[in-house]
Image 1 (spheres, rainbow over the protein chains, first blue to last red):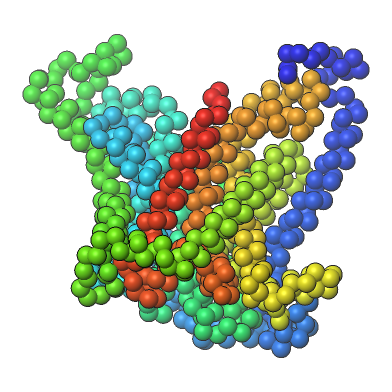
Image 2: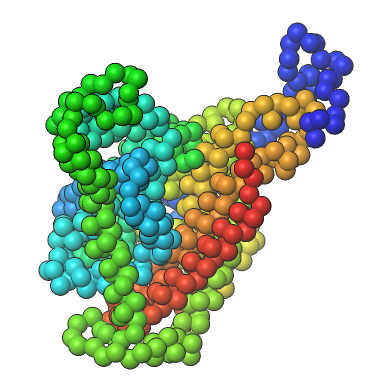
Length: 296
Length: 316
């Protein structure tokens, strides 16, 4: 297409490359329309959160008698004190922090070490290992849920932190992601360090890991979100209320007390708040970071 | 790992340092051989013990009548035979295929449109990107509780609003005709931002000059999309389509919370049925057999998709 059309618009000033005025004005109208459309879409996307905050501040009677309204007819904090007394929220919060936090740290370390080996070393079995990792990426994890449960049950690890954490300590997606990132880094620095006699562990930890910071941040956040928010895994591996994470605890609470909207929404807000705050703090770096560097 | 400090000149970088004796050199090389395995070991232990070995066990279990505890017998392919005459399995398979057939293409198409729009210079671009990505950040099972309430026939705000503008929504989330529609819509709502971010990453790889050249040639935005953007992001599109299909097949959290497979099993997907068979009815053998049928479906679909996109892949 580019070669067949005459290149220049006669009205174009050759000293100022760019579009002619007419398309630019059309462009401005289009921009305004797009922004309006995106604003409407944004409000629709946020509707569940808006409703959640509203419901958590309303009484049960208010929610039922005024279902059409998002604005409480009277504000109440009682839902928050109520959920706090009914569910061991502090304990479940701690469980979630331990589970998601330790999994994130371990998997970032293990995934980046494995990804580094696959990207930078040539060794017998490398291709087989890589293919196996890709295949496990494609398999639905529900397939292994039953035998993992039995395995952990044999070890006596149901309702334990190690049972929740260790099976998640490395994952195929993270290894694949880190491998792709390390493949794109120049080799000169590690060669120089190797000649200077640095150990391989030191090269990885002191040179490659700092260089991989953007990818580590991305994969770390993904792991933190995925595990903090996960339902099925903690639901299956914990049976006692005191070992449940927030997501599992609230899902079960909903099953038992199906009609207490305000109380449940107050609990939900407590469970969601840390990830919402974390996302708001890093959102610019996170979204832009994945969009520009991470997922190539 | 190596303790020998050798500083050769630049000219013989690739050669072993001359002052090393043959024996030391040999030892050093064989130890270096093991280095990648040290780096891989933690991940391979975890994946081997908690992914590969359970996969083997699950395949084995699918040929037994195992319940969650106690002895079990080897029953050959009986579980697989039973699947084909089990109406619950047929129902779940149909529901899964309906979910995948609608949720996947709609969410991928919406994500692509949003990514192309948000790849332009726009006011508040970062804000819009963050808002659209937001549903992916928070717990799906928890926000699904809010969705379930909003779609509730008695107190649901969405049903109330739709009814007041004349749209009949029947029994809301409890309506057999509507439940699947709602579950699909909420699934799309959740994932579209994630796919959009992947598309944005793909769009960064399209050289700017191509857009400049084609706009000087008078190409409309739609022509630019069709002739420049679409062919050059085919790798990203393939990745997103495969991931989106896998997500759709594995959808669980919001269905469990919003409908628990109901009403009348209208939203019971294969993963829901596997969960119910394995962890509520304790038929581990039968649940494993269903899992492997699901694996075969997902794997073959992924391979078909990869093959289809590779056939028309553009390298640049």
